[in-house]
Image (cartoon, rainbow, N blue to C red):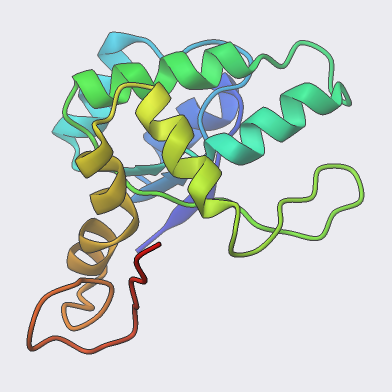
Length: 155
């Protein structure tokens, strides 16, 4: 299994040519177009857009020419193509573009919904889909008889 970070068009293209299995991030410079999204789907790639990270980086203004709108449009294209989209945040403690561990997943799910995923699709992107794709079928799912490593509290 191979994973690549690709937040710009050139990096994404390189990951595609290299037949990378999982691409994290989506374009911040140019929106991903329909043929690229279709190729990802056809070649059974997985995308972890990390929209919350893309949002923070683009708002920070550190790198000129980066645009959160391109990232959001890329997820819209991936979703339309039927791509497997998994939720992830790229949490880190960077003083420039830090993403807090844990709580930020809620923002990521909201951004995925804003980019066209249904509430149910976004929740699955953070729970059942990663568990199925990674082969950890006894984790990250709320079902009677499965391992209890996830607790829901009303209120």
